[in-house]
Amino acid sequence: MSTTNKSAKKVSAFAAFSSKIKTAGGETRRGPKKHSGTEKHKKIGKKFRQSLRSKRSRSSADPVRQPDAEVVEPPSSGNTNGHHSLPVASNGTKKRKIGNGVESQPKPTVESSPAPTKMTKKKKVIQQQMVESPPSPTKKKQVIQQQPVNIKTDIRYQEEPGTSLTMLLQETPAPDTDSTLEAEKLFLWLISPVTASDFFSGLWEKKPLLLKRHMPDYNTGLFSSKELHQILKENDIQFTTHLDVTSYTDGVRETHNPVGRAHAPVVWDFYKNGCSVRLLNPQSYSDAVWKFNSMLQEYFGSFVGANIYLTPAGSQGFAPHYDDIEAFVIQLEGKKHWRLYSPRNKEEVLPRFSSPNFSQDEIGEPIFDTVLEPGDLLYFPRGIIHQATTPDDSHSLHITLSTCQRNTWGDLLEKIIPQTLKNALNTDPELRKALPRDYMQYTGIANSDSSDARRGSFLQKVGELICKLATYAPVDDGTDQMAKGYIHDSLPPKLTPGEKSCSIFGNGSVCNYGSLSNEVEISETTLIRLIRRGVARVVSEDEQVRIYHTLENSRVYHQKEAQYFEIPAETAPAVEYLLHRYPKFTSVGSLPLEDDWEDKQVELAQVLYEKGILVTDEPLKPL
Image (cartoon, rainbow, N blue to C red):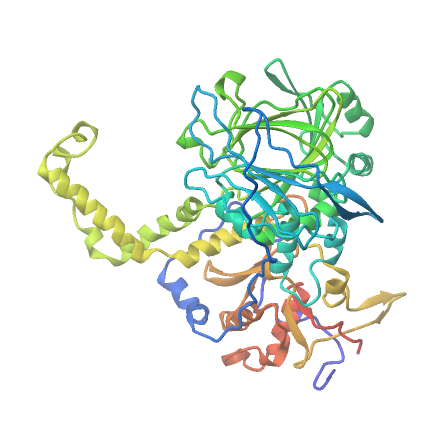
């Protein structure tokens, strides 16, 4: 690599450009800073916004390809055994590789409840699906369809993944691929044999899904009770902060947390006496859960959290309740009996906040009643009331993955509407005209049933003005603020060895006995790209252009403030160019810069490289 015109004393790009590029995020700030809507803000961000709105030819990523699958009409006969029974797969078997050997496994069963409806006193008839995988890949799949109202149920199925979870976690993301498409591989493993398109069109936010795989080793490699014991031994796990011990007996829910560290023998004594153990945020301690969640969050575009639940035989740890997250329950060890209940009213459908504990007589009859075993998966939307118990002859260990917490259209509108009204008031004289002198004579609660014609005209005028507000909505600013929150929530990526060797995290200067070696630098011909698709977001706020990123986030949720650094507005088009080029590599010299930065592509690339945003196509060679 060229060293022409380089100073003998190497200084990092951040040190050299500290006057222009400021780093922040590590400092403590009280509360979120509000984005400005002033003319000064618009002037400073003009070049950045123009670059975002300019039309460029952009290469799009290849579309996601679903494995070949077809729906075949099922046999005409079927059997159900009443309200609490679930369909059972036939006794056919197929060969499947497990570990180092091959053994016959029963065909997996896929069951889906009807869309939740308002609870009535009558017992509900459960419509269910049973899907049987073929005995060999060459034969057709069978689907027994249901037809609940307004729910798509002509489910197509893909071949079951032949790779174990451990191998998937090791192999993804593959080199030079799109990390979001790679994350989809993990999601497809999670919901197999259901396809992603059918899951999101027919099940997501609508109704529960049960996958009975009859494959005890399917979820192996994600977490175990042995790993939980090691975490307790090797980490400063504190009661209440990191771990809870709970019980639910005779309708009474109790938390038994003492004060201080949760030493393993103390926790196991609670467990021996019938308490459930809940480990919060296992991704902080388990590399497998960290890798799994950090990739899935990129797929969902929303933070993916987790809790571990270990429950002794013949017990229940939590009262009936609903949550404010989409839940994926992955059964790891033992058995657990789950019962799900419909939301009790429209206000509890897709709620924004979790419920208090319910008593048994508040929740009605279950719409779903099943026992999870190792390898199984249960999904249910937020707002579905649930409770779970262990049988007398088995403990249970499961992990619940959670996502889509306050990541809704309503949350976006909360960001947009205040600034929308401010923009409209500053711009539109119509909104600044006086109210009618007599408006109090026909409005308000006392006049809500009035048939006064003036009231009708008044309400019509309000509706017209509300519709007009949409033209002033700063939608891009609002989505940037949502994305900024997502970046702050997110786990840092768990990088592969290849990503480390081609980035600041694994390549660069080494100091040994006071002597430096392996010094590297970027040149105009160096090929670069973003290290992952979802790690960074360019945001214009507080009269600055900032790059928020996840690279310096903690595995402990919100342990740090949002991490960002500021860049001059003139460099925003080059950063945008990298965002749009992903996953392709581009040469440093081709970064589009103008004005004072026109010939400073190397300096900008060095800044982004030193912040961990960029990866090179191959490890930089020592000078």
